[in-house]
Image (cartoon, rainbow over all chains, first blue to last red; front, side, top):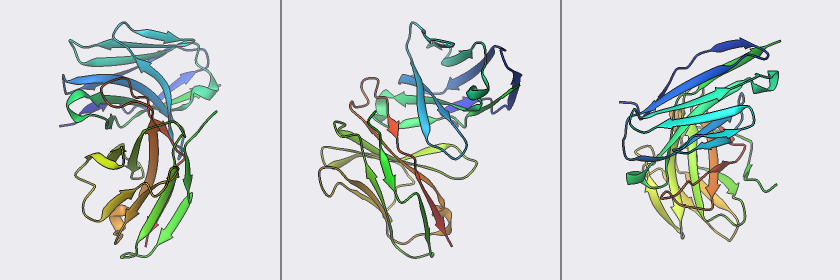
Length: 111
Length: 116
């Protein structure tokens, strides 16, 4: 059983498009949620934390639905620089500090 | 902006050899981690370290692996006798908070380990 599941994509969208990624997690004890982005052969970089009330950072909006164990990321007005793999990351209360990563969703923004 | 650094960026070794991967976490962080990513696969947790001891480890982190904080700045991962399947990117991460709060973890650029 996978702790965190994501649609691997790839998503190929034109510049300016809106794109949404979804993620589900298996453990209801999960308590902290994040979206990281990873460029090819680089380290994961924190994009945003995901809070229960939902949160927005510029063109990026993250939502959390604890009842459905579901996290989403919406990117508006896609830029070429948004091309990357987006990683859904969950931290579970009963396992302390470790992060559980999804396999990532690949996004390519096309000119 | 403070960042996690790792050396070397690429390590090539023969099967059975010992390797030590080095990391310098962000200076005011207290929690340290090692993850690995086999090419084309997801990032996997290996171990977390706090207050000079291991706080958690995964099934991957067997007796061949060890971690150490030899001084106030470095955090190392040692693989005693490398296997072919240890070939991966190894990421060090650090955070200023533990797992019972939003513990954003900041990752270093990684060390690519190739075992021949």
